Length: 387
Image (tube, rainbow, N blue to C red; front, side, top):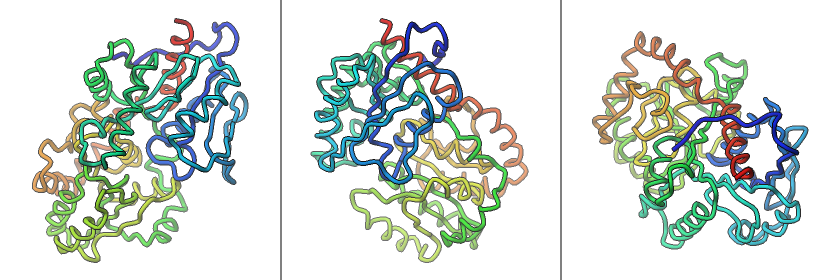
């Protein structure tokens, strides 16, 4: 899989017109929506020479904004099925602008595009971890993703690990799979405290000291093992609490509360649900450590953001962090509670080591840059149009 290259800023003949299926930016943006928002932010930073048309399913919302210049919004005002809109209804609107290429940043592409296309596949959980999905949802995701990667001229992955899985699982030629990773908003995610941090944590009723789980709660992210590990680590630090900042989207959501009770953690775990983007950096900065473990991820943005905010994080293998920091010391190889707890205890007890680690982190994660990611995207779109 290739993962480098920058777009042409001045030698493109005319202006390339790109249609973007942008519905993931509507409502509460999670990983895919934040990916697209980050790429748009990166595009603001250089002269890309592209005309961007973003297509949304619903209505313009009060806080909606796009970068000034070559960005255009199209609202379908469709309040029904997302699948119907993204697979069928949006195609006519896309064809009306006669794009040079269509970009689907969220696993799928509409039918009947009549233009070359590029799709990003962020993970393969629906293929590799089928029990996390109901039958209909699992097969909906599988069929749409399989069709999209074979219809597209390029399949984008968010990490080298994902690029390998994509090529192998869908039997794609290596030259058709390209890495366009997540980046970091350095203005927002930094170790420097913001005057509003204390107020934001107080509004969330978060008290220090705490460990942080940032991200949606899913079975593959091992909530049972993490809670058991936290109970073990809390034996050494009785005052420590666990803050979970992410929506509970397990197939059986009530299991989370059951585990909390089973491990004797009543009153020691604060579940915030989904939190606003503005609260993430204060939560990272205020934490003693963060935790992000999973049996399968595409990139895993929270660990990189946590390190950018100066907070060490206990992680599993198979994340985007692997690409930049192969020997990161708090990577857990055995995903049982004992191994997770040992890594947590090591972080909490090693203040001097943590300080040195954060100095190394700045260099290691510098590669995750939204401008560079947007340049990679434009380069691939340009290659598809030129081929």
